[in-house]
Length: 291
Image 1 (cartoon, rainbow, N blue to C red):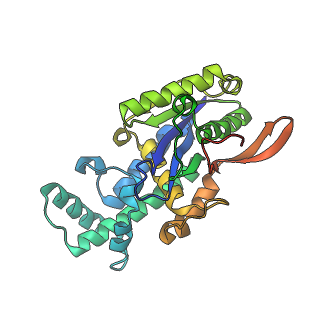
Image 2: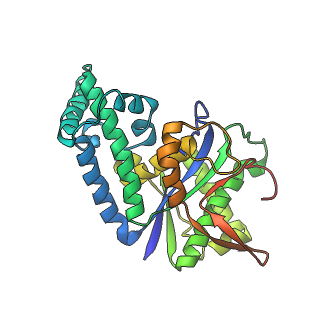
Image 3: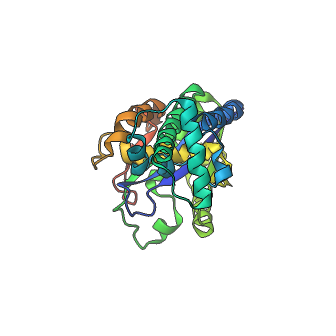
């Protein structure tokens, strides 16, 4: 059997996010379908409907936006049936371009928070492993051939952690990306091909990482949506050493500890030295030399 690492990104528009994050969650192939089924059930339990029927999806920016917390806190926590009823009203009015009531806003905000909690619960229940690399949004790409054609250092570290995990499991791993802009996707594939075929380390890591990435549309893939949520929470609420920019307290308080529990922990080996390795890595300068 094998693992699938579902990958997404956060903060790449470099407008409001404190960091630029790429990463995602690895799920064992044998647990993938039960995981998706649990998320579908959680969606119905939270909203009383499947979001895609209302042209919405489970994403970090949709579930944990500041407004969602504001709406959720403007009234007492609703009983499940009442919340689902008012949620359906909110979603229907969204399609009809009608203004929702205060109760409907409250219900939808609370449902979004409940769904985010359910995603993290499912990830833990199915032994998901979290891998992510973080860089400052101020990092500037130099105008060099290497910067254009080779993987950035943070992407190499992301693959390194995934390799360590797969090597310990003695199982192969696939890479599943959220489709973005075609030109950017092709450039990233070209960079990965160069890494896996033209560097000694990359060739070595193909022993466990399948060097042929797959791309899917996030609105059709709930695991990618789950990855999006987790990466969003890293951007706004997870602060390991080195990541000292301000976080959103409501995300850091509830989801920061859950991210720490999900991230991969293992050991790596380099130049005969064994060291502890973590799934989330912060890279201050993704274009500089050295580690």
